[in-house]
Image 1 (cartoon, rainbow, N blue to C red):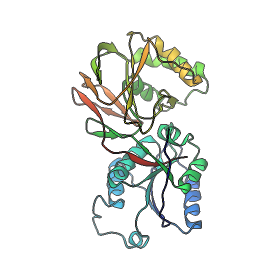
Image 2: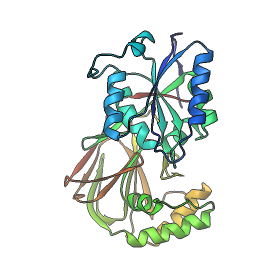
Image 3: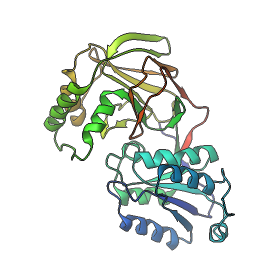
Image 4: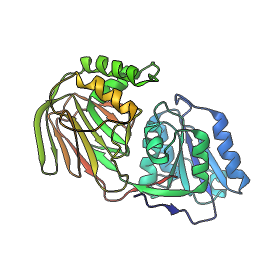
Length: 315
């Protein structure tokens, strides 16, 4: 059960971190949010870094984790203490800004403008910017689990095999509207995936089998689908989802049923819940992490739940 908290202070100073390269970016919704902030006597500061590195550095500066190179801007100081960071973009933007929110113990809000908006859907139940603005302005927040895979923090999900291949297939393509289209896409993507002979451990379970998909979820949505509906945001457990039968053909049916919202994990694809997860012999694989793809340069990866949660504005 989600425990809701209300941010108490009357003073408002939101820092908006805007990714203008996000798939569905719209300045109209940014203006709508800033108008709402101004109408209640609050303050806001807008940052729009051009690079992921710039997003990380600027969010650290705004949240007090790093000094400004040329001194704190006067207009920023006059607006008073920062009370929340707002990520304007998709899952990748959220991940970059949430790192600073997490370390500075500030709440973070989401104005979803990415393609999939998995984290927004998981936390707010919607990726409609209009609804997200209402949620941000109420300033109700919940605490969600945070995990680290290798050296990277993540807040939604991380995966190897099928999901990274699915994301690569998405490039410059429109997502199917109906389940039959997802099923066809699942079949095409699975054909491009090689089985990963990995050793996977979660708590007391160990698997030493070829697998096509290893996915670790803290939140329900991944790649635009609710693949882990049993995820609880703040229970200090992750969901591990792996295929067990070394059979590519199951992924067509898997995506089709996920789209319909009626997939039940069983003998073909299993779901486990736990805290300590390790992945061995995964070197040179692609890693999906909160909507972005990275090359794995280590042979083994440890996934650890962190000691304290992240505050996120929610319903």
